[in-house]
Amino acid sequence: MAWLEITVQTAPGNVDQTAAALTAAGFSELVIEDQQEFKDFLEQNRACWDYIDEKLQQQLTGLSRIRLYLEDTDTQALEKLASLVERRGLTMCQNLLAEENWEESWKDNYPPVELGKSLVILPYWLEDTYAGDRIPVILDPGLTFGTGSHPSTQMVIEAMEETVKAGDNCLDLGSGSGILSITALRLGAKQAVGVDIDPKAEDMARENAAANGYGSEKFTALTGDVTADSALMARLAGKYDLVFVNIVADVIIHLAPVLPKFLSADSTLICSGILDSRLEDVKEALNRAGIDPIRVCAREDWRCIIAKRRLQ
Image (cartoon, rainbow, N blue to C red; front, side):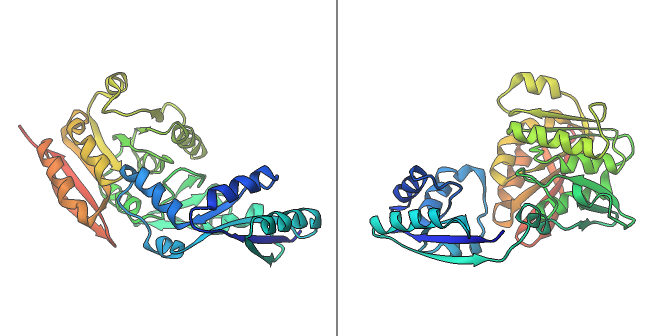
């Protein structure tokens, strides 16, 4: 089956009304590309990230349009759409897409990712066909952050290769897909606990751990904010051999005061997701909390800190 990609051009500030009209007319699964909407979204969610892809910003410059997809044989829907667009004084164009198995083609965006000296991140559908000799970490690359492709995650995993010892207990704050906890277990850790504020991440991490053969005796997935949830903090209380925090600078700074509660003098803390421009801010926050950075790794614009709790 072939599809038509329809692009409806709108005026700046009019994209919401146009999208509402299309939805009311029965057209769903709209793709909105609007520079102002993007700017508003970033402003409203400023605390969630330090870095925005400049290429994406450039691609949206001056844009205000909506894309949707129709079967090429659905002439009735196409005529209905054309009439609606004409009544609203808008313009549209259409592009015939080649026939393709869309349900499967998205998987092409997730090839195996070899990391460090011994690991490979594999999407679950490649598990049975992988013929290499690296240690596999099996993931379902769904909506949750953590597929191994980002420099911040890569630096943590490479540091883990040098640090994880057999029998270690690990804590991952901001666990996302569970990739770091699962990797630690693959490298010989005894147990891992992953914590994320998103309940969807908890479910995803648990499923990914199970895909690697790890049940509740090895991996625990939890939801909550350790800085605000005293019950969660009480449950997690204790010293871990390794603690991972792969998020963004502002969240690491926010977490810094409670991190010593999870660290003994022999523990290792690995913090990543830090832009170079925020490195000193994070280092200062860790220092105030009694944690000393001992090494900084760099990849592209991103930095990863390996640190130890300061001896009293």
